[in-house]
Image 1 (cartoon, rainbow, N blue to C red):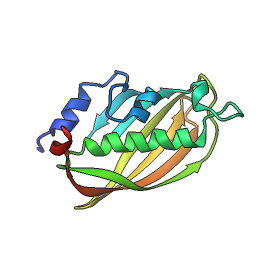
Image 2 (image 1 turned 120 degrees about the vertical axis):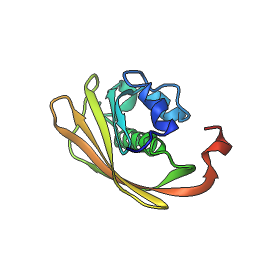
Image 3 (image 1 turned 90 degrees about the horizontal axis):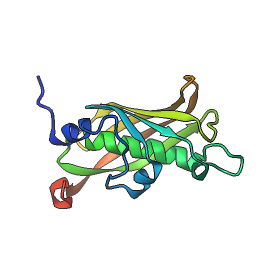
Image 4 (image 1 turned 180 degrees about the vertical axis):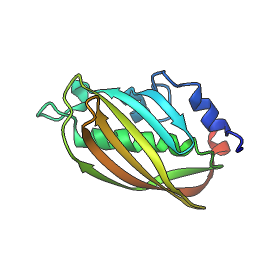
Length: 151
């Protein structure tokens, strides 16, 4: 059996809590609640606020993209890499809308883990199960050690 890593264990302690004290200020603004996290999988819930919406009062595409990018980033961090990894792309499909006050869940799954590149898929779903958006992203290993950043 594989030993759990330090980053994953830190996040497991946050299950059920609001993610508003993370290194990502943009992620803190989103104010999601961590529902599940395992190596290679994460689920975070959000309530759509007016500030997250476009003029039509539905979830802004940029905010939906931010949600998925941030959740992928957290889950990738929890894989236990010694090095900082960063997004090199984010491909998003917007499939339906989410309105002010609605709750959504963002989940991400690690599709492939390589030496230098991790590939992720993410989805945003409403409580009804309806798919709001989906994304795929590649995270690339940098030369910056997480220990140099204080992690």
